[in-house]
Length: 256
Length: 222
Image (cartoon, rainbow over all chains, first blue to last red; front, side, top):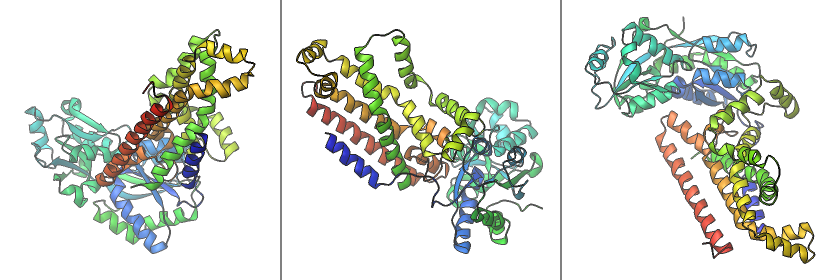
């Protein structure tokens, strides 16, 4: 029996012990709305500069908390300015960073949903009054700036109090999008950059929400104090023409 | 299929067993054969991870060992990086979460050995170590085996505390169960499906092996 355990252990050892970042590419943290766009930017970066970065996606608030607790990220691309600002105030970043994109919010209804989408949320209001909104997806406003923008847009249209009991909150805008696109909700207010992805755009209809309905989603990125040269390169690559073209194609607006 | 994630999951399972098994055999036997004051409280503490939400463990570990706490900073100075968001941090979390899965089956196994057997062994002049090694451990072996397999299977399935303490870092703390969540969030249902099926297969296989082995070790119970 012992012999067998030893053999088992040897087999496991052959798989290699997970170590710390020795030869692993540097890791950066990014807001979930960047899931598709930033993955594409990273692919171009690898082709153009021959270096790889590993990206972990999550809600800006969750990632901020992790960085403050010591998570080994070298750069943070947030969905707003407030969360990276907290890190700067805590002395964890190189400097105040830069705004790299302006995000947009979209109303999405999956195929087969009774929700009719329009930019003034009139269809949503009608369905709500008719009692037809079973569940409506937004990201958790406490940790996700897109959730905060969704709350603001719903308030602008006077729907917040009525829709509140019907809300399902995603851990991040990616999860809210998941809820809205899989038909688990009649629809949702989600990131335009995720909706634009062909794989998701096929799953329903959407309308772009006017930027005047919510505070602008000015998305800021910061280098953390631990940033290595590859990540510094990625930071400047994000401000270059190639990255900007991808961001605009993905539905973001360029910062002024 | 996220191979590094599978590797980390397997390593976490093996590492947790390696840490807990010696402690579990010692402590499980102690609880089985000794009576002492405060035993009720000790047994409750050993069992508490079983009923505790993983978020409670995650919260305490992050607050205690996070970069903002003095203990966390001391640890960082010692090992060069903060304990959370590292494989070592996952091991600590996993070891704590699995204490009841190790101690309880082993304790039950040692309890099932009649005290006559121990007395007879002592009468025959066996030293306590020989008595343990030759008589008790072989009799308690099915319990030890169950403890190992349960711990391994439970570690593979660990999600909440791994996500909280580990933070989904690829190649370091992204286990297979976290990778499934990550792929779902990335709208990559295909990969998530493959990994979910893999985890299901490993879990079923693990439990089948346990049952088969325990029948072989102890046919009367099978």
